[in-house]
Length: 63
Image 1 (cartoon, rainbow, N blue to C red):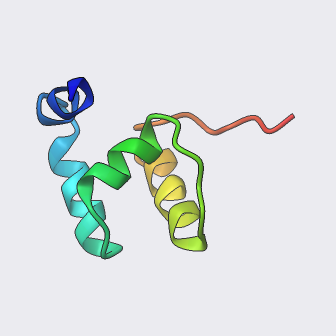
Image 2: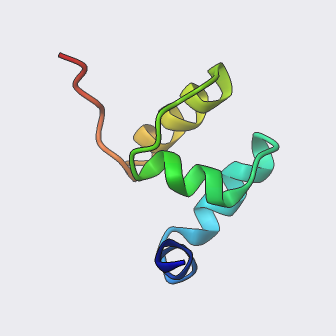
């Protein structure tokens, strides 16, 4: 429940909504990906790439 309030008060909420519309998913899923959820598909990887390009998240170091 607490995460819902964090999403609703996020400064990037409109960005998450726009990305979600583009990739036919929920804004909540995009928010969770931006905050550490594991990727499960190629679409999730594409969303992560967009978030990195927009400098919402940093590039992941997979060492």
